[in-house]
View 1 (cartoon, rainbow, N blue to C red):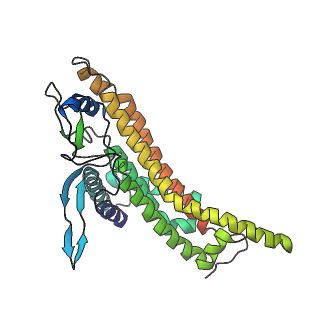
View 2 (cartoon, helix red, strand yellow):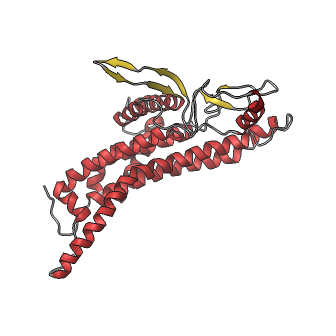
Length: 328
């Protein structure tokens, strides 16, 4: 639960950390009458905005002579808060009266926790899972819940936009709620929080010296000139490993963001596959249905991939070499 609150606070940092290319605020772009028809047709062809629309902006504030802010509440944050509250409430209800023989919500909650614990134990071992399970289980459940919540009808399709020539609203430019993981701020927040934990767990397990040796130290039992050569080689490999570690938060965040954002656009494209006044009311609710089932699977797979990758990264840095003691 602490992790969920940390994610919510991080995503609520000063607005505009991640904006869509070429995005601008309403009223900033002036369109001449000559280009207005082109602009209207382009708006109709647009997919969902790359950046989460701002619902409320406030700040900046002057505190002790320094400017703090501005801050924003985005449509993605509304989904994050909603999912976080639902998970917390459900967890409290499921564990309110613990029974020896679980039933109902308690049985379902215990099944999820036990299944995740056994899966992670088989990957990272019984010792490490006791220390890290709280993070990996929370991340999996939270990502899965936000991914599936984003598929509920109305998320991304209820909001504000500009009416078309017929007076209908063909494109939502400012949805009230937006899939949380389709916002790069959210996925990047989870990746950064993980690597803070990753570093702490690594230091606790192998110590500072062990951490450095794991990255730069030569592997294997060698002697003489060959050992000196391997020291140089593994130092160069260690530099590459440092670069790889620095890019892991980016790859983790973009992998999840890209899959969820692409799924949102596929669903919207299918719902607006035709502009025919008659067929669009038939195609709009039917065409996306097969892709909804696909996105349910994608939401599960992406939550699992994020959890498994982060757990493997943790295992690799925390495991001891054979015959190697713990360094402090």
